[in-house]
Amino acid sequence: MGAAKDRVLQLLCLVALVWAVVVGRDLRKEVLSRQLRNPEKYPQFSDFWTALGSFVGMLIAQLLFRPVFSAVARAMIPKKARWSYPVWGAKVERCCDSVFKCCYYAAMTVWCFSILQGQPWMPWVLGGSGSTRFCWTDGYPFQQNSPELRRFYLTAVGFHLSEVAFLLLEVRKPDFWEMMLHHTVSCTLVGYSYLLNYVRLGSLVLLLHGATDVFIYFSKVMVDTPHTRLIVWSYFGLIAAYAWFRIYVFPVFIMRSAWIEGVQETGGEVYGWGYLNFALCVLLLLHMYWFGLIIKIGFHFRATGQARDLQSNLSSMDMQETKKDS
Picture 1 (cartoon, rainbow, N blue to C red):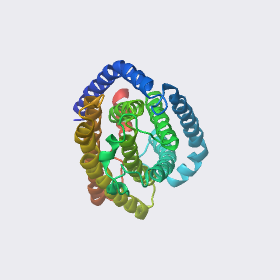
Picture 2 (cartoon, rainbow, N blue to C red; picture 1 turned 90 degrees about the horizontal axis):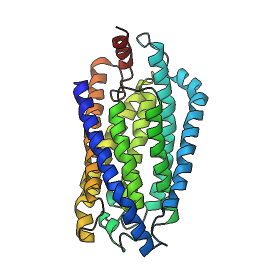
Picture 3 (cartoon, one colour; picture 1 turned 180 degrees about the horizontal axis):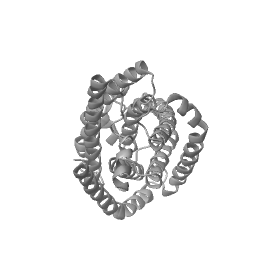
Picture 4 (cartoon, rainbow, N blue to C red; picture 1 turned 30 degrees about the vertical axis):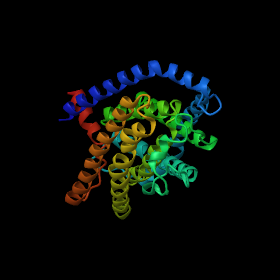
């Protein structure tokens, strides 16, 4: 089952990568044409220096945070007899990374919400009073976006690139291909959407994902600790946030806007429409798969009294090492 799943993920990853390259090959010409028509309002390639700074900063910050917080993480996660030392070390490292990412996503969610509050494209389901239809109005694709929104967006670009770097440079974990597929579509979406000035819709995607990720990473922080009550409360918070933002809001409002409203409002002139919607569908597929695992975690906890992160499934690293040695 695991091998079949990995083959499907590898195929989707290959399709996403090849399609992204094909779209990116002609994207530069389209972006340059738009920049010439309206250089003051349209995003510039030079803006990505900010993203590069964010990328380097996030890499350094996370690498420095691990040794600083590791002593606290070891105190939070007492070693269990069934864990080998490599597995315990991986769980401690995951705790450090999860604390860092939980704080990052909390800060980014607050920052994004403060920027989008009161904007006409912010729908009620995300705390606004507008409509996603306005993602495609006001002179699209030459919409005027605030410098603050662009800084937020480019910070997110840098962070997503740092996630890819960590995934490729570190020891391969059981969820490698899931995360590779996720990072492939996420990085291309956030990068292409900035250059094509789909920043309004993209900001909503980043907001709802960031709000969910706060609960995801807080749950990952708590999952291996002995604090059962906090584990249970974090789990129910995760269920509620995930169901609302990623299972309901994402397809019903965001994907619908990209699929239908964009075509209606622009007369079909949405560059990269096919890849944009393919990537959003891949994200939804991953959301549904991970939501199933989250539900399964609850049943496993109820049956055994043990909390496990079935998505990362670090305990299976022992089995993989045993197979290599045999």
